Image (cartoon, rainbow, N blue to C red; front, side, top):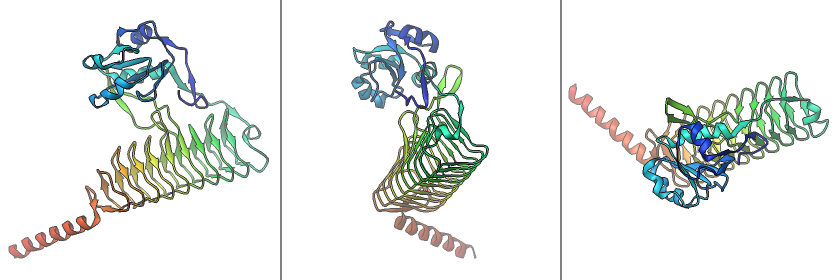
Length: 335
């Protein structure tokens, strides 16, 4: 179930009505009531999940979902306990179901006094605070920032001017500089009946204690689970962290780094400027990714990788030297 501090649950639908509204075909269980969406692995008896890729067949077989949306070819793998909807575009159909069952809580402003733990909290001019916002003792919110409904901000935090924070839980002693965007929807789209549709992003952002987030950095909320930044991690200006990333403790992330969705980063990892990280990768504890590297594979703990595509730095340097020698040789031959 999406966090009720950030998302409203809409009225439950029976499977037959859900199918009618998203364009699916009921295979069985049309009278079952569904009240939420969830992934296969965490879905319960009142949830609808989907399988769009055959690599998730085992997850489909094991799911406890009350309803599953699957392509026709996968229907035999659905558990007998689940209602089944057939769709040629299961993820898009699940996205449509998400919009029928959940919506983000609209912004209704409250006063600083209602949000603040005590009178040590400073809220500068032009700040907008949503319903349910809580701000811990000694924190400061910069001018013209918007803190969306349900956001929790810890003690002794400094939030710069023109920051927007939504769908987020912020720890103590966090520094968030001007222009940062935390909790925007992650980039997710699925091919639907009439073209790509946005996949609703129903997760959160968790920023642990003592994190620094540089100016104009963006940290997207999770698609369903959370995006997490571990304690004492330091993020430079103009960094992009996509949905469902898990960033460890004590990491350093230099400017213009882009980390794609669902990347897992161990503790103490260092990213040089303009590093680009592909999705669903694992970067081991204490690893280093050099500036400008384009990472397309997992990095073992403690290793340093460089280049595009990135590889262990000694290999990269050997290959660079070899290419340089070959180029010089050809130049000498022409002369």
